[in-house]
Length: 325
Image (cartoon, rainbow, N blue to C red; front, side, top):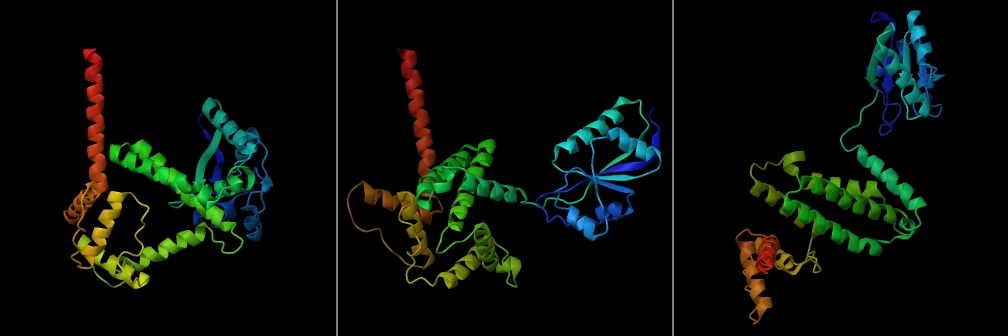
C-alpha cells in the first residue's frame, strides 16, 4: 500500500558543533506544534532548552511500528536524532516499513534543526586533540621542542604536494600542518606560567588580518595587488617598530630563501646594497639569489624545480644504462 496515513513523523537533526539551544525557527515551530517529542538520548544537550520552552521529550524506544500506529490515529511525532544506538534502530525501522511497499505510512520529513557553519569541523579537531593530549602516553608528554622537527617535515611535504599538483596529497598535507598548529596550541595550554589556547591563537591572527586589510574591513581603498602590498607593509611596519629591516628574518630557513628575503627587505626600503665581495660558490649563489628576487623569481622554488628536472635526468640515465646492459 502507498496511501499516506494522517500525520507525519519529523526527524529533527541537530549538530553538536552548534550551541544546543540555537535551533532554527522552523525547528522550534515544529517542536511547539508537535503532539509528541521523542529523543533517544536522555543526555542530549538540547533537552534542557526544550524543557525551558515548555516542551517535554519522551524517551524514544526503537519502535517504528508504534510511531506509525500513532500517526494512523492522527498524531504527529517529532524525533530528535542523536548518536545513540536507539536512534539508528528507530530510523532503520521506519526505513524498512516505508520501503516494504505494504504499509500505509505517514509523511516522513527530515528537518535540520541546526547547521554547521564553515569551519565547524575545526571544533572536532580541537576536541580530539584535547582528548589525545589527556589520554595518550606519548602525546601527553610532548613539548614544543619535541614537535619542531615534525613541523618542518610537514611543511616540506606540503610544499612537495603543491609542486607536484597532487590534490589529494595537498588536502592531506594541509591537515598534517593544521595538526601541528592545534598540537602546539594544546601544549601551550598546559604551560604553568604563560598559558594560551587555540582560541588565543585564532583570535590573534584574526585581529592581525583585519588590521592589515583596511581596504576590506576599513575605509581605505586598494584596487590593485600592489596597493594591497603597500597597505600590508605600512601596517606591519607600524606594528613591529623594528630598528632594522633585517629584524624578524629567521636565519634558520633554507639559504636561498634567506638570501632572497634579505634582498627583498633591502629593496623594499630603497637600500642599494651590493653583494659583499668574496670568492667561492657561496657568494656566487648569493648573487644569483639577489638577482632572482629582483626579477620576481623565488630562488628556492626555481632551484627545486631545476633539481627535480635533474633527478628525472638521473633516472633516465639509469634506465638507459640498464637497457644497455
